Length: 122
Length: 105
Picture 1 (cartoon, one colour):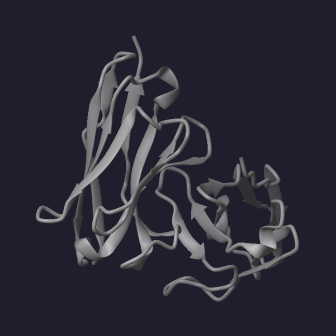
Picture 2 (tube, rainbow over the protein chains, first blue to last red):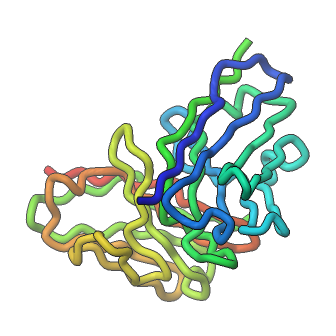
C-alpha cells in the first residue's frame, strides 16, 4: 500500500535552517510528482511546493520562494524540503502528498503522510 | 492571487443532506477537489475533477462545479462524516479554501 512518512521536524530558532524528509513506499516513486503542504496551528491547509516526477519542474508558494528548496532522490524513494531563514509564521505541520497523476502533475493529492511538526521559536 | 471562499461551519442532522460551498472567480472553468480532515488526522481526498470519487470513498459523497461555485454534497450524513472539509483548485498555483467545519448534530 502507498505510504509516505515524513521526518526531520523539530524546534528551531528564527533565521535557522531545517531539512525535512519524506520516505515513500508502495508505489513507483519516480513516476509521481510530490508536494509539500503545511497546516499552521488551528489553521487551514497551505500548499508549499511541488516537484515533478523526474525533478524537471519545481514550483513554490510565494510565502516560501527563495527560502525553501524542494528536491528528490528517486534512487532512495525520498523527497526533501530544505528550509532556510525560518520565520515564526513557518510553524506548522508539514505534510508530503502524492500528486494524483503519474508522469505529469494534476495538482491534486491522493495520498498524504502523517505529517511532521516544525516549530520556529526563540 | 486567486482565492477560494468557504463558509466556516455547516451543521446537519444525521441522515440529512449537507452541502458545502466553495466560491472563486470563474471556478467552474477550473477543476475543484475536496478533502476531508478528521481531528488529528491527515487530509483525505474525497472528490477530484469536480465530480469524481476516489476508490473507497462512499457514494454519499458527490460534487459539482459551475459558474463561480463548487459544491460538496453529503447525502445521508453520518456521525463519522463530522470533520473539516477543504476545497482546492489550481490557478497558476495550488489554492485551498479556508475550510468548513461540518457538525453532525
